[in-house]
Image 1 (cartoon, rainbow, N blue to C red):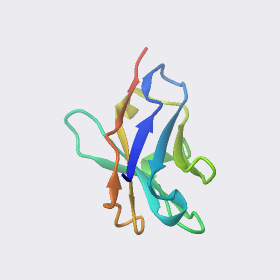
Image 2 (image 1 turned 45 degrees about the horizontal axis):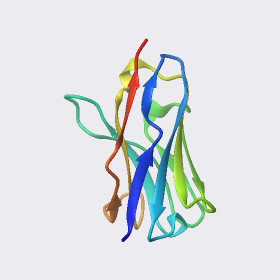
Image 3 (image 1 turned 135 degrees about the vertical axis):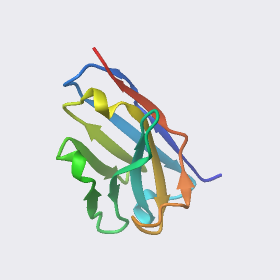
Length: 119
């Protein structure tokens, strides 16, 4: 069964860092674009960043500003989101999705992992 599973969320202090993992099973992350999304309580879902299949071109939302960095590890068959200098407004459920390109990430979707930034 092909699926995505996120992990690595939790409670983080403002200014802290955390790395989220999106592990794929049943398919290769090298053959699909994989993107991270987030949804905060009462707010619309936002695209955070995406890494394309093949050459691994990266796309990121404007609010990322170098703080949230996507990467891919072919050996682990996973995509990561390194989150640095976290702010309370980064609190959200973060989820990953995979698809044929970064505009069409509907093939696979994980359940999400909660990140809470609070002191």
